[in-house]
Amino acid sequence: MKRQRRGYILLEAVAALAILSVGILAIQQAMREALATRGQARDYTQARFLLEDLMGELELRTNLLPESRSGGYEGDLSRFQWKYTITRVAVPQPNLGTEFPDAGIYNFAFPAVFMGKIEATVSWTRGGRVYEAKGETLVAQEKLLDAFAPSS
Image (tube, rainbow, N blue to C red; front, side, top):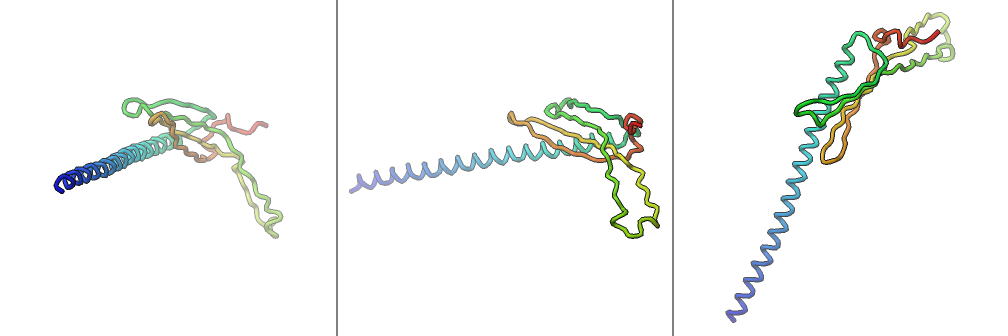
């Protein structure tokens, strides 16, 4: 009778260790996923700051030319690269004749026939995968140099 009891306790101990090991593996996997998610969130936050810095620098320029440039960051940010493109976009002119019955009475002027468009991208790698944060904005045509002027 005592022999059967000892074998039963050994079986309980083995089963308990198996359950504990599965639980520990699940906790380890959850912690690994949490660390990876934290790293990705930090990268997205850093990329957003870099993108806002790049866009702000371009918007503060007094004159813009149509161009595309790219580059990278140094030091701790060496995983991040940037690129931007400045182009001209047409501004659609509304047809007020059919929308407003008294359009002839009012003198509507739409001086902007085009604007500058800045498209910027910050990309980085994590775990062999490439991620990107993109942004774009429009700037007034007064900031654009004559290279953007419509040809006559």
